[in-house]
Amino acid sequence: MARSTFASRSYRDDAVVLRTYDLGEADRIVILLTAENGQVRAVAKGVRRTKSRFGARLEPFHVAQVQLVHGRNLDIVSQAIGKRAYGQSIVADYEKYTAAAAMVETAEKLTADDYDTAVQHYQLLVGALSALARGLHEPGRILDSYLLRAVALAGWTPSFVDCARCGAPGPHRSFSAALGGAVCPQCRPPGSAAPSAATFVLLDGLLRGDWSTIDAADTKTARAAAGFVAAYIQWHMERTVRSLALVDRGDG
Image 1 (tube, helix red, strand yellow):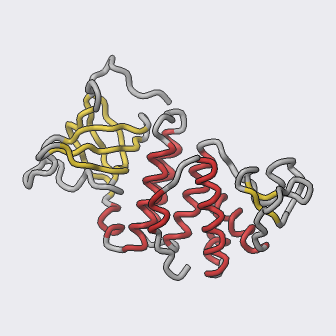
Image 2 (cartoon, one colour; image 1 turned 45 degrees about the horizontal axis):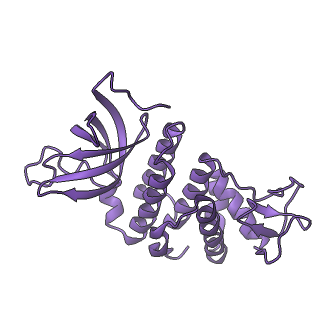
């Protein structure tokens, strides 16, 4: 979906705040993932002042309806109406916070130049942040499911059952991030990892969002799956998601 054109100088959209950084003495640059216009970088003028009209509505992990005006280099936020204050619950819990930080960093990297899947990326991220804020599942498992589904949206869908290279029916016992997940004995590269059968089941559940399978996995399996998720997304994104190093997996 293409971004709004300059035919309309002002536009409105729902957005989740991915990241912010200070500009000058009172302003802040906000990086937004919007529902209809992809990733947008904008200036929120005066947001750091005590009496700012934006309040806390433009903090990371929050969802707001924003009014933006096209600018030469950066758009300008002229209005922000809070919709879901997920950040309040998330930042109060370190395990949730580290998971959310890895999510928004991944979203920022995946959507930097991608407008075609803006709606799907927006909906996926908002759903994951909502689950985190409400404590519906273990934060690390919400993160891993989000990561696999986000890279699938970006065009790198893994296979954890049939062979990712030749399509031979599985399940298989070898894993290659470079080849796309599970690989059969004929396609298996030297040095491939050999996850347990339970780890492959969990990885497939994470990709499909099958929460009965995800929640039922034991701690050892969940931690093993997390390592394969991290290896897979960082291989295909061709860049490091720095926040993953800080993720607190807690007890599962």
